[in-house]
Amino acid sequence: MQYFSLQNKQHRVNFETAVVQGLAPDRGLYFPETIPTLSKDFIQQLHQYTDQEIGYQVIQSFVGDEIPEEALKKIVADTLHFPFPVQKVSGQSYALELFHGPTLAFKDVGARFMAGCLGYFRRNSKEPVTVLVATSGDTGGAVASGFYNVPGVEVVILYPSRKVSTLQEKQLTTLGGNIRALEIQGTFDDCQQLVKTAFLDKELQARRPLTSANSINVARWLPQMFYYFLAYKQMKAAHPRLVFSVPSGNFGNICAGLMAAATGLPVAHFVAATNINDTVPRFMESGKYEPAKAFATLSNAMDVADPSNFVRVLALFGNSLPALQEKFTAYSFSDKDTIQAMEQVWKEHHYMLDPHGAVGFLGLQQYLETAPELTGVFLETAHPVKFEDTAPETLRENIATPARVMTLYDKEKTATLLQPDYTALKNWLLR
Ligand SMILES: *Cc1c(COP(=O)(O)O)cnc(C)c1O
Image (cartoon, rainbow, N blue to C red; front, side, top):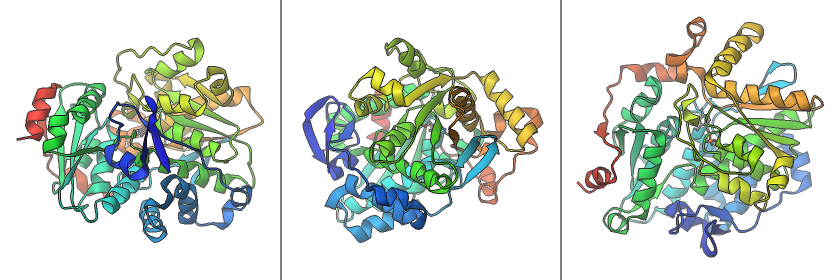
């Protein structure tokens, strides 16, 4: 499969180059040249396949022959080695639980898949590559866990100081080994800007080859299509007409859902639910893309003012706003709405939402009012324990801590504090 830069259609690379480069040299995001279609039979028979078989079928044509069948099957199996259950929450609303992986958030899937691909492509090379990544919280832990001990790969994670939760910070600052954490005294957008600048710095790249693991990387973005197929597999017998509501920050996850639909997955509608960082909901109303400054919220993994994947969403619809509006709706919710949803859902349905899932739940409720004939699935993107610090007092004692993260709290944080200043970052990388 060939990928082109969304800044320049003439610039084309294969899957391997897109994965290793992350971003095109002109700063464009890579986008597949053609969108493969899956057979109707496969989709109708989805329930007869294992999750791993589905993952392989879905991703194979996006990879092409650059990773042989056996190796790709192994990467998919290593990626999908935990369950993705759909749970009924209330009425027509179901939660697709994406937090059963090693770091308790959905980003485990993209990070593990990318680590597998990069490990495969680097299998014969001697020079190490540095994965440089900005995180608003969950990416860091997922990337750290996914790439931990992958030979020939060093990982440097930038995160905004005091804007991630205790557990998130522990996940990205306690592994050691090939993982380093930089605590940036700024916002996530500052971190993302620093990373983008580093990728354009030829002198730095010559001395320390870099690759990205942000959701802009096609190997992180595309495997997120799996969630939607796995949800449909579980729902289709009783509820074939689905609307997905996706709590969105950088819009990688929902863009993968839209791509899944483009390959043939039957989905009636998509809802992007954001916190007050509402650049996309405003765009859907006005047609004007006007990113403001990012505000800190309870759903901190979505505190993004200028979502990098939105250009891919537009590309999927030929940059036509009316075409997009037919399939896609965006709503924004405040922290007050979020807390209210968490409290209400616990009280009435005994289901514990995390703040991101709560935003997704709210988006779903709002859309279902206009489309009562549909069944809704919202993506519960993180385990509530990841955001225990900021959960309402009344809920905190009811949040269960999975055994596999208990030990993290006792581990010592190791991170380097840096100003959001590119020279400081560069000096540190070349130290
Ligand atoms: C990253 C993240 C999101 C936002 O996903 P995007 O693909 O960036 O839109 C939502 N919820 C959680 C818990 C996340 O970690």
